[in-house]
Length: 256
Ligand SMILES: C[S@@+](CC[C@H](N)C(=O)[O-])C[C@H]1O[C@@H](n2cnc3c(N)ncnc32)[C@H](O)[C@@H]1O
Image (cartoon, rainbow, N blue to C red; front, side, top):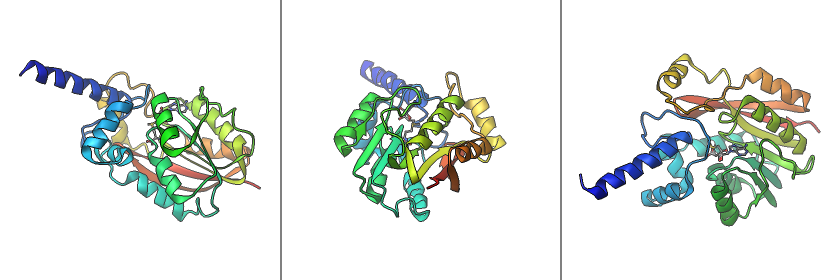
């Protein structure tokens, strides 16, 4: 192998390692998700998406995750549940990453304000420039810059299975606080419904090292009961594909 070829394969395996750490594996059929210490690298992912002739969201769904149409199908389910019917004017998203749900949400409604809380700065900057959203300072699990009862739709996708139980719960309190009466809260969690023994076996035996945070499980009843105490009633839930398993998307409505 030439030196150039060797360099290329070292670079490729470096990118692959980074992607795996971020919960993505570029091997389509044998993907095992790892931990999410950092989100997928911005430049490399954008370049790969361009080379594949796909939007970054479709590239993540189709090539990196091997689940073509996964984002679309979740948005379709949410539309069917009436999440966009009332025309949310203010939307807040935690951990939008590449913006694959953000972009499709903007196709469903035209909010006057779309706030994001995202720890990966290059992706947050890209979303601000591309979609005109507002990036809020993001630290831990706080939505402090957002006033109480000011948001019509609060969402987070594929975030709470990558952070610790307490981080997720702290965000839950904040999500309930910022949601307007009548507003919706949408997010997915890996409940017991998703954790089939076969999937657990795969993670346990093939998850590799350094995959500390994923998959973080969340008991369904704990989550639903907590939101109930915060004045938010569960309206619906459905499963969405996630790696070798699934994740449960929950839709809450804040009581008026
Ligand atoms: C697995 S990715 C999912 C990204 C995107 N929602 C999607 O489904 O493609 C998790 C995202 O959460 C972000 N994140 C991690 N910890 C966070 C935190 N404490 N607050 C906000 N975002 C966070 C990561 O940077 C990343 O963008």
